[in-house]
Image (cartoon, rainbow, N blue to C red; front, side, top):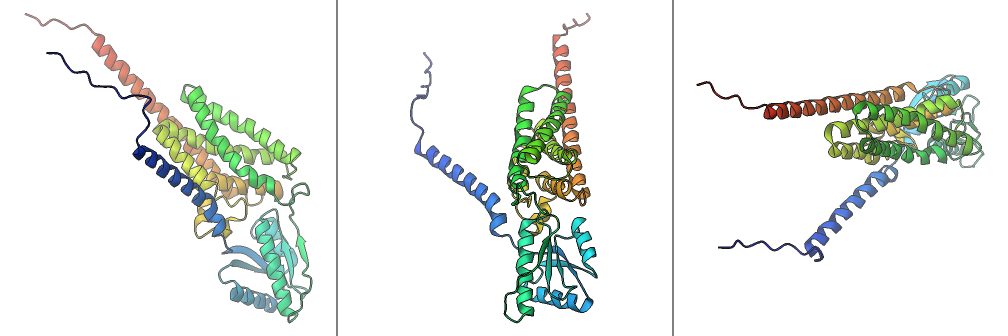
Length: 351
């Protein structure tokens, strides 16, 4: 009796409509997630707990503090100082974003657009409102001093803000290419570190010497960029080494859909919704942005937290790579041992 051979599916037959509907639904979910991840922080941004200083006599400082609390509750974390020089020192040390100086009577605004242009604009608006209230309705010009300004070639700070996404994508591409092109954990780790150095030199040169978007020491800025790229690339490489493509996907989501939108590169971490700004500073994109601002515009002040965060991610990636390499060696050793046992001839039983 002959067996019936099952009919093979026609490879040219069109897909069923249910599969088309599933593909459309999946693509819709993906694009909705992307829009939410990138647009939500900007749409829901507001001023909350932004550190600023108020300088001047105690009575005048208290009056301004009360006015700010009444107009914008919980918007600012205020540090009071007695002089203009103290306020400027706090700004240059990255302890505060700016200051309102009432030591001469009329409110004056001291800003640092290199720290955050968005906060600087907010402070200027507040200074104008305070001056109008003090002048009972007139609109006097408010004195504004930008003591840490953005470079003249890039007065809006577009270069570092636009460069945040390429830095993350560079880490993603490095992990993909190194995984597929190189064999051996040591070779991949060496490749990732060498790439971080080479890309750091190139990208810093473009931002600083071509675009004119960075001030400060080129070597310090290079260190910030290289550390940011290395932390991203090593983390993704380690996740892929230990968990395969699922680990790479997890790392891509963390860096691209969480870390980059919450980095605060376009405004300030304190202006992002709720806890998202603090979370963003614990991820490589946010920490890298803050570190580069510190090295480029503030002589390295305020860089320590970002350096710690990036170093931890770099070390985590190295540990994951080591764990993945050791697991691969154990799998190979186990396979060889099994092959050797099966290859041994059977010993005849004794009579």
